[in-house]
Length: 226
Image 1 (tube, one colour):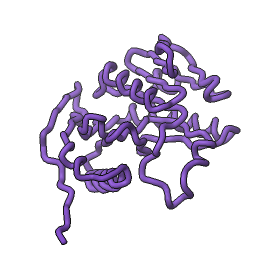
Image 2 (cartoon, helix red, strand yellow; image 1 turned 30 degrees about the vertical axis):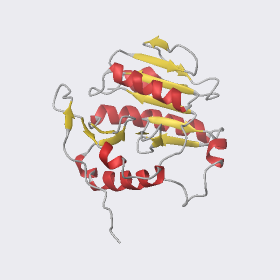
Image 3 (tube, one colour; image 1 turned 45 degrees about the vertical axis):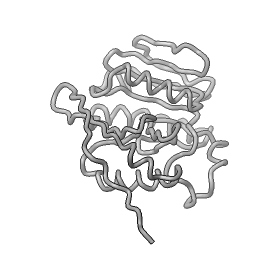
Image 4 (tube, helix red, strand yellow; image 1 turned 180 degrees about the vertical axis):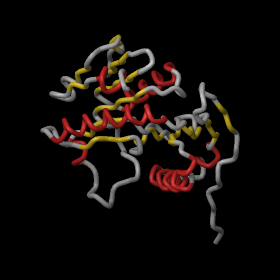
């Protein structure tokens, strides 16, 4: 019997260098590898091994629907704090009543094959979690989109790329999405079947009705970091 080994990605690299000293994001065409993987579980297993083998590089990895693996540049101190603030406030809200699970940046979601995206923050509703297998038997990636997803733009991401990603989240089935742009001081609000609403320099942004009672102090927690 011949054993088939899934190869390591070869460097067909596209580099988009951001301003400053941040490491440049890049992408690899891994479509030849994906063709060897029979299903979502096999892709999850390969992707888990790949990210573990390369965690010392300091990148966050995702796969788009065209079969390219993207290495996202480090967010730096400010970007990490912005993500933490939103995740922390979601956890406080969750603990106070609705339950469910806060989705953080290393929690990947299965998109249309072979996509794998990791939101900066999100929320899984209790009824969504109830449909998953018991702990210890769950896949490495969520098989469905969270109820709520937020993306926070970094210096290495263009607004257009982030808007396209939000449209993918809507197509995957989220009920509410926020695209937070700390540089333009805007929040783009996405809902299925609706034109995105843009808030200019809001003090707060409400998650109602999808996140009942959740109001995020976006100005103090994102825009005006000291």
